[in-house]
Every structure is written in C-alpha cells, then in structure tokens.
Amino acid sequence: MMIIDHVAIWTTQLEKLKDFYVKYFNGRANEKYLNKERHFESYFVAFDSGTRLELMQMPGIPQNLNDPVEKQYQGIIHLSFGMENMDMVDEKLIELTQDGFKILRGPRKTGDGYWEFETLDPDNNRIEVSSVFID
Image 1 (cartoon, rainbow, N blue to C red):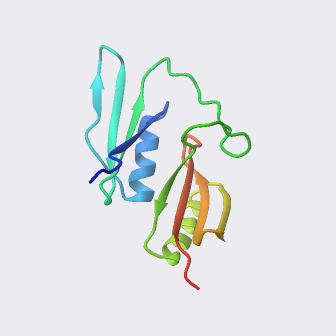
Image 2: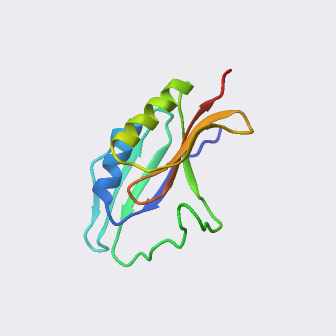
C-alpha cells in the first residue's frame, strides 16, 4: 500500500497557520522543530486520515506567484478536506464565515457529485471542504 504521507507548505506566519489547521480541521501538531543554524522552524500537523501537513518557516523563501482567486500557475493549487456528510460541510462553512474567512465559491453541487465550498487559509492557500452529494 502507498499513501500520501505529508504535504509541505512554506509560510511566514508559522504559529497562525498551525493554529488554523488545528482549530478548524482537527489537526494535531507536534512540538515545534527548530534548526538554529539554518533558522528553520516547522510543525507537522497530523489528521485522522494519517496524512500530515509540514508547515515550515525560514528567512529568504520567496513569495508564491499564485493569486489564490484569479491567476493561478501550475503546481499544487489546493488542499481538500473531506467531511463525512453534507451537513458537516455546511457547518464548517458557517464556522469559517463567522470567524471572518472569505468563501470563494459555494456551497455548491459539483459536476462530479460533491457538495463543496472553497475558502482560503491565513496564508491565502486555497482550501476545499467537501462531501459526496446525496439528494
């Protein structure tokens, strides 16, 4: 069996991004890793599925060229969090909206049978929250 173990994200606001994934997506963060020589800091945030995010911060990393809403470039463009049902998707949308996060699209039924919405994390990384659509 092969799985995606983790996806890594560079950030300039490590604590804020870690707190976002812990609070809104039930992630569990390890203790912060520090490499004082390289001025590198990171957290692994684990999810119930076993997949993890590695959130990393280090001086000198250039800004990403993607505009999260309009102009996107090739490469990984969003993270998707699957929910057990459509009601949970709607509840997550309400929670994020009430806490001031912008909803880009949705909730909506997609052509391939999902109930989803799109939002942005504190670093403007695009996030999808979805569940299988049931009539």
